[in-house]
Structure formats: C-alpha cells, structure tokens
Length: 261
Image (cartoon, rainbow, N blue to C red; front, side, top):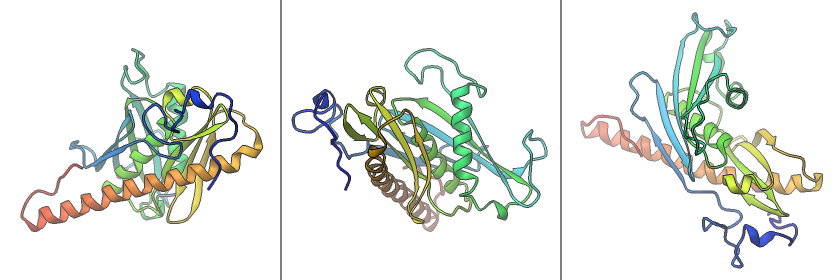
C-alpha cells in the first residue's frame, strides 16, 4: 500500500496525535456513504441519491428517449449521453443561485458525460438520448465523486446496460500528508486528485488533478485513490444488491416493487 504520510511539518493540523481526522476517520478511510435507489420521481426512468459525508446529490435518468427535440448532435447508430447539473442556492453554505450555464457546473457535466459515454453500451440504443440530470443539494468536498457515483446508481436503476460501475474517490495532498476522500476543509488546504475506477475491468477511466504536485507523489496518490474507489464500489454494489433483493421479496409477497435504501 502507498505511504500516506510524506513529511512531518503541518501534519497535526489535520490529524490528531492518534492519527484521526476532524471527523474521526483515519487517513485511508472514505466518508460514510448513504445511498437510495428508486427515489420518488414519476417522470424519471431511473433515480438515486448519494450522500458522501455532507455532500449530497440526487440523480435522475431519462431514456433511452427520442432525441428529436434535443439541440445535441445525435448519432444514428448509437445513443448519446447528455448530462445536466443544477445546484440548490444554499448548497455551498451561502445564497448563490447557479444555472446550467454556470461554468463550474458545465465543466462538471462534461466530465460526467466523458465517463459514461464509453461506459454505457450505447450501440444498444441507436438514435436515442440518455439524459442524466443531477441536482446538487449540499457540497462539503468531493462533488465530482458524488455526482459520478449518484449517476452510476441512477443508470443502474433505469436498467441502462453498462460495462461496469463507475466508482469515484478523491485523495488530497495536504501539507505532506495524503488523505482519502477529502472534505471541503481538507480540499482547500492542498491539491486534490479525483479518480474514477472501473472495478470489474480493473481500469482507471478518469483522473483530474486540481493543482500541481511533485511528480513523485502521483503514484502514491493514485494507489490510495483506487483503494478508495474499491471501498465505494463495495458500498454501491451492496446497496444495489439489497435493493434488488427487496424488490424481489416485494414481488413475491404481492407488494409494490418500490423501496428506498
């Protein structure tokens, strides 16, 4: 495993003498990940919500659907994956309305599309559009991660065929220490590496580095991030399997199929 402490100066600002962070986690632990599938939304084909620590995102998937009214360039032999992101005004802790054209949200939407366009089996849905709508409810670090993790669950809930889960986690390089799944305070104190990992394929699908760091640090950060992604996969897959079991039990008992985790 990668060394997660690279120097002593400033280390105790984010770690107690016992090696614990402000929220009680150790350096290589992800935040508590709470998920639900089939969130109530009658207009969506699939829905999910993910809370990773205090960062919360709701995801809705529409499609495959007719793309005739879309302003995106469509393809006759495959589906096109489109992402739209909105944010509630108080998501960042202060009143700041953001629309779809907001630069930060537009860049994040493009990142989500770049992850799922090759991951979805788009050739099964020719000439259609798969729309992923993300609603950011609260932000406390790791927003890219939670958006991608929530989109993964919503696509699964919609029954969209995919090659693998897209599991995403961050590593922060904070005053010489590597911290997994950083909060907003930790993120603001150093560089952050975001990694999307495909656990069944054993492949990295996305990396995003927020600031320059020494090249010698990258391997350790990537190794730690992949370990975090595997923790995320265990949590997401566990929720999916539990949801499927509850759905099957409900049908066997003559009950409705909807259940929230």
